Length: 315
Image 1 (cartoon, rainbow, N blue to C red):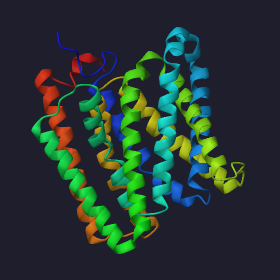
Image 2 (cartoon, one colour):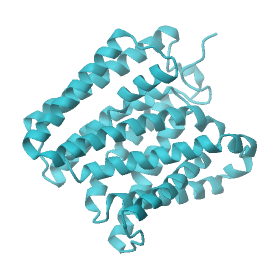
Image 3 (cartoon, rainbow, N blue to C red):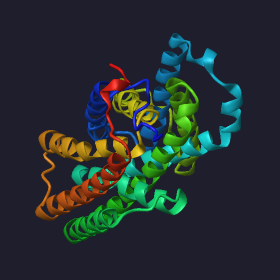
């Protein structure tokens, strides 16, 4: 019998509101980052550290650590460490890109992660892609090249470097999603995320030391931004996504990224008056169209195997 796409303890009525919540929350990340005067790597450290503290506190209150399977955790320690390091690299590359190119370009490029998820799944998990998926990948890559070329012609090497960093962040995000789908099921989500966030924070320390950055930032305004980043896009965004990865396939969670670039671009235009130019808008839309093609093809393949979102799974 085919396995349900949604875990038996969940349902469409639970998954969809959580997806909407996660998209709304992660859309605020780029704006909060630009409000901070700290170096991007320092922001990564404090965001992940506060995120770890908040998730660990929630887990302790819920008693999740009592049900922790220590054997499973010990066996997967190296994988959890790798996922945490990957998250740190994702944040470092993306946060830095936001200071070098526009929010619209940075966010849509980093949110091209479903493209890389599909490619990595094909290469390492043996999940063959159909022609429509490959067409979507090529379209999205063409959009990324067009956007990057426009940035290079209009803003120079700095913006192009920011675009490349955002693409690197997309690769790390794809690896992070694949790892979460595999290992988040083995322990309570509060425990999993607190471990991952804490490892990400620790991993960021050597990076900051290498660049001679001061991690001791305690100005009230900066601390407020760090805490906001930990609560909204981290606890209510990334942590919700990690929970959803235990309930539905990774492509369902990845599809939520289609909403983030739109929300972030609108907020950047309203708050920072970052109005995207014609080439950015065209590249932006082409990339989103390519991602949508890939996700639609994967979803169609899954629907042909089993009917998703069966409300009989429970309320």
